[in-house]
Length: 398
Image (cartoon, rainbow, N blue to C red):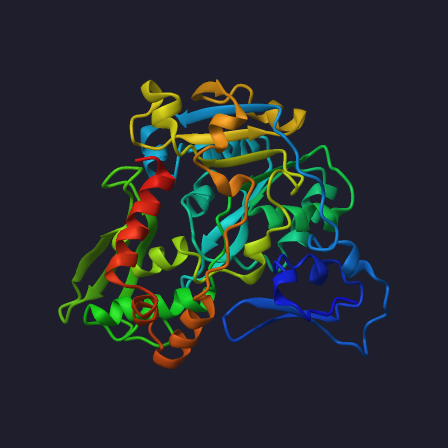
């Protein structure tokens, strides 16, 4: 029986919930906004299946990729709408064109991040772009298994712990399954994200941004964590609002800030709002069992400067023959490179971030003030902000 006594030992992948034959495990939210499994001990049959699929309890060994690429989509429109080089879309389109299904993370109506699936090329647009919030996987593992058993090709994308959870849940390898994880710095709290959304819109003269709490005339039109309007390396956080006027017309407002000036992004990059398990991730370094890993190729300007145009370059790590098979024939530009060059400026491939000494203070201040901006400011200083900026620039190799 899964019993969480140390929250750092649960990544929230939901594999335990998905595999339980008695359906006696549910995910419950803690004070920080993260979901953890809770077992109905009376209904539990003590079969142990939940423990057998837990990535924290059943972690694989670190793997070295068999091939490493720097890659970019030839379609400039797709690449500019993607966080890095747009390789996810090429892979996903290939799966869709074979009659397959693609799972990924999207925003829901309340701008929470959820996992879902698409069966058309048009449906893939919701999955593009980074979303720095832990997604709700909910029933996607069972849905993926159902599609696989029907013989359909399935591409499942997610964080390493989500891929590890899926692989453990399935308990067998499917020839028609392609698993793709993203290099993950860590997953921020959905609760912190919603507080920030409400706060930033109120700060700009609105009442709220959540549909069940706001003036119905005010809506969020789009959110882009990694807008390339100022370049790939110096990306911006961009949020577009629309407000209906008295005569029925719509006014739109673009709120855009450089990432190093945005409180939410800085809290994320300083590891303040991450899940406790992210400080000791059980699935980094290929341990997820994925076929492919995709990331930003930070430091490409040093490794392959002629290939860098500041529009986004993907780092693609190939771990299996299946992964290489699906890459073959894609309409993308690429250069082969080595793993050392790829991970030099991307430590998150192999290493977990360190837990900040002021993480608990951040959440206490957030609870006290109800403000992400204030909680971040309380954890910061002028000198610290300068160090943050130097840290981020050094991380991106700029």
